[in-house]
Amino acid sequence: MAAACLTTAAAAALLLLMLVVTFCDAQPPPGFYPSKRFRARPFYRDFRNLWGAQHQSVGGAGATIWLDSTSGSGFKSRRPFRSGYFGASIKLQPGYTAGVITAFYLSNSEAHPGFHDEVDMEFLGTTPGRPYTLQTNVYIRGSGDGGPGRVVGREVKFHLDWFDPTAGFHHYAILWNPNQIIFLVDDVPIRRYPRWSAATFPRRPMWVYGSIWDASSWATDDGRYRADYRYSPFVARFSELLLRACSPRAPPRCHAPSLAGAGAGDALSPRQEAAMRWVQRGHMVYHYCLDPKRDHALTPECRRRRWPSSDTATMRRQPTTTVPNNATS
Image (tube, rainbow, N blue to C red; front, top):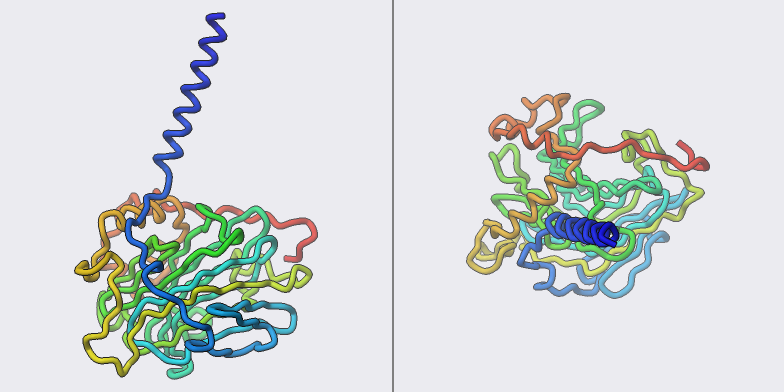
């Protein structure tokens, strides 16, 4: 009898410990939710088809785009912007999506071909049982226009494994103002890219884009696993496209909204900072400044910032991807 009570007590203690660990490891709430403060407008009021019109379906404030063996699809904002908050609720496709990229990004590549700026949120396709990787990136004045070995990106990657991006819509956003770029997932800041100098920061107006396309040469495990069109069509659903932004001709008083509420300026709140640290500590799997193979003379901000040794210790490593037996590689 005593042994049974002891066993029951031990089990209860173990359960309590598990609950405490789970609670302590839960994502801290950011405390402020900018996506709830803005209202989406009808899709065609702010956006138009860019390519693959036959692979695009528009309804209300969103669009569904897909990729098959014949084409992908993309859309573009009707106007450029010099700063602002740009958001979209996106639902990704489950299952085998290796080689496929769904993207939400800012760019002026059509206005400045060969010398453009770009701010990316790219969802890198994966294989069953492995999480999607969200790649954030910044290109400045043609740093993404070089040939092989000459592209200078500023990639930071995260595994989207603290939620399921295929089970429902999640909100992804970019805040861009003259001093910083902040990437957000469900209103949680996950990366801040400050303006270190004029040479390392995009300042020219950019348009807003969404697309889905085949990037088999590099998207999944550096091209090891390619798009398999037996699993097509690959579908990406965009909803609640939010633009709270300033056009190039807007008066000087127009500025990007604050992420932490009125009067906060560029600063994040302590709760937002804590939530960002939580994501980076548990889900960041690559940072360009921590890559010993990179030539950091090309990314001078990596030299200016002192990266503590704990960054490399806490950054998660990308695991080996398992491919189903009937998938091509």
